[in-house]
Length: 422
Ligand SMILES: Cc1ncc(COP(=O)(O)O)c(C=O)c1O
Image 1 (tube, rainbow, N blue to C red):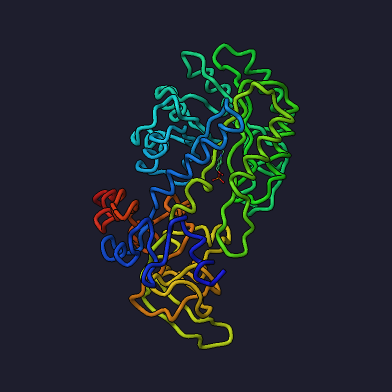
Image 2: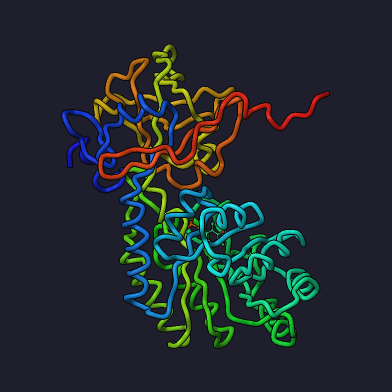
């Protein structure tokens, strides 16, 4: 592969270099930057829908009694919820805000599944009023609260933490003994007993989520085998967690190989007539997205310790994946795609950890150039913030040569609108 095709392979399939310029969803990146400004999150809507269908149909082909739920924490925004609703998949929400956004995006309450290790009474009431289809019991207090608040029986799953680890960042491992989520196998047995004795809760099944950005099949299979020991139930929610290729060196665990592994493990450990749910977030949206920035300054290396810094007009306010998890990204100048000299791509925020990509190849970057960072469709928009008064970027959908803003850029007025007179 050439440096250029290597780079393009990280973007949504269909992204191309035309007349030397990166074209996303049929729209030149320079045109997107000129029309919508930078930084901007660009989502290839066509690829997003293709990916949702591949998940939905790929799982159904292997295990017909199944459903995919979008883990909406990865991109909670009404246009994205609307795409998921239109494509007929369910949605996993964690808390009141995501319930509100999912309903506003057109997801029926019955298609929602509620998570949370600290669900408040207010959130449980919202979920019950919205007719949320399934509530995932994380702890014994969830059982008590639902018993008190529900006026009709509520379908629930019990979240199990079977002490399965995976090669991912420690903050993204959610099924080990050290995790705050769910119940250990023995406690899960006790929770199941209590729910089965309750008239307010209906014991539908089990939930397990190993973690996020996982690129090996074995941990998923291990977790499924572990929950299979708890007995036969109607539903098994096997969580999300399939990782994405962010860099040239990341191995690929393809969707087909992942689904094969999960379904093989389910065939071995779970009842044949059970309903299987999957809850992908990152692997649905990450590759559909990229972020466009403008280069503001290039500071040539002036000491053996300092690389050449290329500073753009965004950074840790629109992408926290680097500073939170050490996630590696690649980048390119959009009209000089792939290859170049190693530089360190940094943001505009007031700390040295404000990094987008260390030692990344860029071709002769200069102020005014537009830089694209691929694979930013997951967990970037949702963790965007106003550090240093940054305005949160717009979300632009591109498809078949057309582009439209589906979330506008924040304004300076937005930064002070909540403040009370003092
Ligand atoms: C319970 C649960 N389900 C699904 C997901 C989605 O994970 P991912 O985005 O890695 O697919 C998460 C996120 O970590 C989660 O906490």
